[in-house]
Image (cartoon, rainbow over all chains, first blue to last red):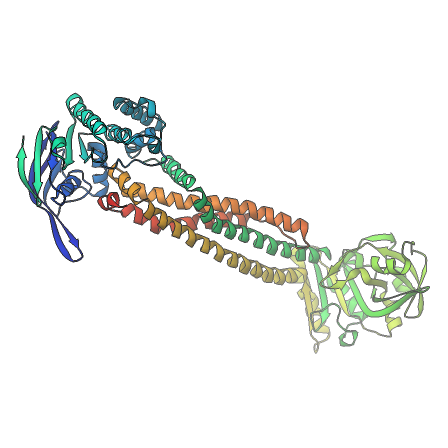
Length: 226
Length: 394
C-alpha cells in the first residue's frame, strides 16, 4: 500500500493575470508508515505540494492517488470525506478553535464523521492522554502554552486514526524544548502506530529527524534522500 | 454531521459573540413586535366596532326610503304607518317590525332642560333592537293605539333631568306637551356617533301628532335568523317598490355594515402589518450583513473545519442555522415583547388591542423565512471557501 502516489503533478495559479507555476511536474511515492520530510526554501512549492497531498487543493494536471484513490475522480464532498478519514493535519500556528476546550477541539474531526458525542469525547480523551495532556482536557487554547497547543493539535490529527499525518512546519512557532517534544511525539506516532508522517519544513535539523528527505526547489523535486 | 451538532455549534457561535448577536436580533425583535402590536391594535379596533354593531341587536334589517339611513329627514320619506302594516304583512310576524319617527326636541322637568332626540316608535322596538330596561316598562300596544303621552327615557336623559330620582311616574314637558315617564333604558352607549342614551322614546302615533307629520323615517325588521336576512330584506324592498313604483327603497343589514367595516379595517390592519413587515425585512438585511462579517472574520475557522473534513454542506448548514437562530430567537423575543406591549396598550390606553394567533405565527414564520433568505448568501459564501485560501487568511 502507498499513502501517496503522484505522477507529473503540476499546479499553477493566476496571480493578477500572471501564471505562476508553483509545481512543475512532481513524481513522488510515499509508502505506508514512512516518515518523510519535504524541505525547501520559501517559494519552492513545498506548501503547494503539501496542500495537494492533503487534498486541500487539486492539481492543475497530473495524477495524485491518496490511499490508492485517484483524487480527480472525487467531488468536493468525497474529497472532504477522504481528508476526514485518511489525513491528520498539524499546522505551524496550531489552528485550534479559540474559546473551545482542548477536548472539543480534538473531537472536531469526529463531528464531521458523524460519531456520537459520548464516543467522540471518549476518543478525544484517549488522544489527549496519548500526547500527555490528560490534565488539560477542559483548558482552552489561550490557557495553554504553545507546546501544549501543538500537542492538542497532534491529538486532533490522531483522533480519527488517519493513515497519514501532514505536519506543516509543526515546530516553527515553538522553542527548542517544545519543538523537541513535538518531534518526539511525531516519531513515536510513526514507530508505535505505523502512521505515515509527512513533515514540511525549512529547518535541516528538523528534516534530519525523518528517515527520508525530499528536497523541493522551483516546483520540482531536486533531491530525494532516503 | 448531525443536525443537533450543527445547532449546538451555531448556538455556541452566537453565545461567543453575545453583544453582536443581541444587536443583530434587535432589528428582528423590533420588526416582529411591531407586527404583533399593530395587528393587535387593528384587530382590536375591528372587534370593538363589530361589537358596537352587534350590540344594536341581532339580524337587524333597516328599510329606508331612497338613501341608506335609518334616521333620514322626515320630509324625504314616503312611508307612513299604513306602509308599516303592509311591511308587517310581508314579513309575516308583526312583532318583528318596528318603526321610527324622529326629531330633535326640548324636554323640560321643572328647571332642568335638555335637547334630546325624540323617537316615535312602537312596542316592537324591544324585539328588534337590544334596549334593556332599567326601570318601569316599555311602550305598549295600548300606548300606540290610544296615542298616550308617555315616554321611555334614555339613561343620560333621565340622569340629566331627574338626577338620582326615579323618574317613573313623573312628568316631563316634551316640546311643550306634558308626558308621563313610564320607563328608563339601561345605558347602551353610542353606535356610529348616534347617542342612543340621549334618546327619548314616545308612541309613534303621539310623535306624529306632536311633530305634525304623517310619515315615518324608517322601518326596522328583526329577522328570525342570520340566513334569512338577505332574502327578507330583498322581499320587503321588492314589496315596497311594487307599491310605489316611482320610489326607491333600500334594505341595510348589519352583515353589510359589518362586511364593509370589516373590509376597511382589515385593509387597515393589512397596511399596518405590511409597514411592520418592512421593518422586519430591514432586520433581515441586518442579519445578512452581520453574517457576512462573521463569515469573513471566521475564514480561518472555516478553512480549518474544511481541512478536518467538513463538507460544503456542513459549513453552509452551520452558518445558515446561525442566521435562522438569530432571527427565530429574535422573533420569539419580539413576540413576547409584542404580546406584552399589546396588553400594556390595552390596559393603559383607550386603544383596544386584540392579540391574534395568526399574527404571532405569521411573525414567527416570517422571521424564520427571513433568516433562511438572508442567511443563504453568507452561508453559501462560507461553504464555498477554498480551504487553502481560508487557512492562509489572517
